[in-house]
Length: 108
Image 1 (cartoon, rainbow, N blue to C red):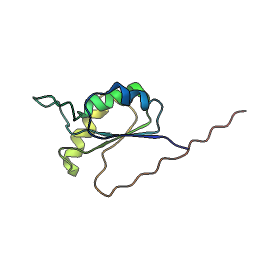
Image 2 (cartoon, rainbow, N blue to C red):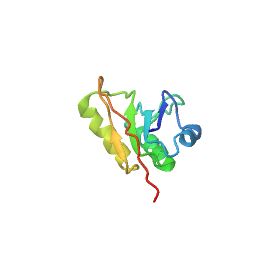
Image 3 (cartoon, rainbow, N blue to C red):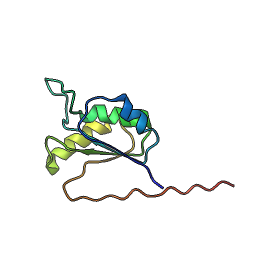
Image 4 (cartoon, helix red, strand yellow):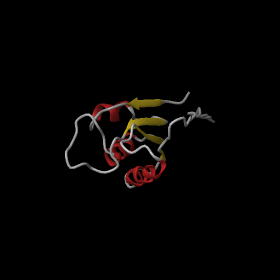
């Protein structure tokens, strides 16, 4: 089946990157769209999360638990992540649902 890794409130974490290697979906807290003046150990920045996702080789990144959850602000989170991550980027709104599709591999 498909694989999903979920990370809630956290700062930069290589442990999460290791857990996420090759995942179909990484759901990660991205509280800030841009680097805040003061750094936080318990919250992530969209660009940092995107770099983590790229290093881990995940297919899809979902940025959740955002400081600015509205639809308009979602564009800035998406843009910040897209600069570093080439896979699919989701910036879900409350009530959105997604399905991880099972990959089918045929060996001839």
